[in-house]
Image (cartoon, rainbow, N blue to C red):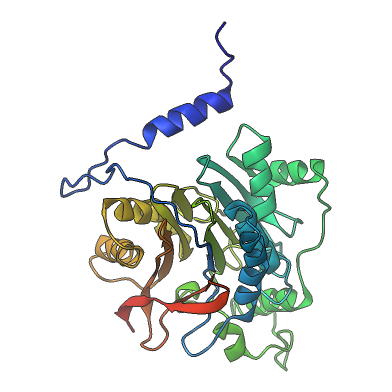
Amino acid sequence: MSSKITRRNFLKTSGAAGIGLTVLTGSGAAIGKNTKRKIRIRPIIMNSHGGRPGGRNELGERGNQAAWSILTGGGLALDAVEKCANTIEVDPNDSSVGYGGLPNEAGVVQLDATIFDAKNYEFGAVGALENIKTPSSIARLVMERTDHIMLVGVGALNFAKMHGYKEENLLTESSRKRWLSWKENLSDKDDRFPPKKKDIGGDNEDNFYEMYDEADIAPDGRIHGTVNCLSVDTNGDIAGITTTSGLSYKIPGRLGDSPIIGAGLYGDNNVGAAGATGRGEEVIKTCGSFMVVEFMRQGMSPQEACEAICQRIIDNYGGKVNFSDKFVALNMEGELGCASIRGRKGSEPQIAYIEDGENKQYKGTILMEI
C-alpha cells in the first residue's frame, strides 16, 4: 500500500529534487555544483546589528548572547536565531524591528519577517503584520504549523492570535513623535505645522542615526532598518531570520525584501546563508540573498559573494546609484561576509558575532565611497 502524498510532502520532495539543478549565469558558468557537505562542530551566531567601526551595537551583542546559550547547550541553530531576533524585536529602543519600530505613513507599525531551517529546507514568512511584537516567531509558526510559506496582513494577525499571541500597541512614544515630526515637516503646502520647539522624543538626531549602517539610511533620511540573524550549530546545520518594521513612513501595505524568500533571506545547508538590509526594492529585483548563496556555491567566499551582488546592483544602473543595500553572509564553514553598495570611508558595515564564546565584530567593505 503506497503512503499518502500530502501537499507538504510533495513540496519537500520536489524542493529537495531541485537543489541539484544547474543554473547558468550570463557568462555560462554553472552555479549549481555538487557540494560535499562538511560538518562544522564549532557553533557560530551572527546578526547584522554590528554597529559602526570604532563602536559596538550593544543590542546586537545581547541578541547573540541570548542565542549563544542555546548553541553551547547543543541546541538548534533554528532556536538560536529565533532567540536572537526576539531579543531585538521586543526592545523598545530599537526602531528598526518589532516593538518601537518606525511606522508607515498612517502611523501604524507593520512588520515583516522570514525564517528558514536549512536542515529540512523549510521556510516561513509574514508580511504587514500588525500588533505582534515578534513577527519572526509567527513566521516560524507558518513554517512549522501550516502547509503555506507566507501569511500577510489580517490573515497573519488572526493566525498569530489563534496560536495564543496577544495584540499589543507597537508604537512607542519615541517612534510616535518621530512619525509626527516627519508628517509635520513633509510639506510647506499642507495644513500641518511642526512645533516651534523641536520635539522628537528627546533623542539626539546624531545618536539616532548612529544606530544604523549607512545602507539603512535612505537619501531622504528615512530608515530601512532590518536585522538578519544567521547561525550554524554543532550539528553543522544552518538557520536564519530576517525581521524588520520596513521602510519608515512607507505606504500602508508595502512589502520590502524581508518577507520575500530569496530576496531578504536565503539559506542552503550544503552552502551557507545570506540576508539583506537597505533598499528592499532593489534586493527583490536581483533575488539578492539567493544570488549570494549561489555565488558561494560557485566557489566564492562569503565576502566575495556579498561584494558580487552589490556590484551587480550597481551595474544594473550603469554605475550610478543614490541608494544602498547591505548584504551579510555565512557559509557552512562559519566564514563571514559583509558588504554595502555605498558609504563614507571609515563607516564600513559590520556584523556582530560570537564564536568560541567571545563577542566580536566583523568589518565589511563598501564598494562606492561617497
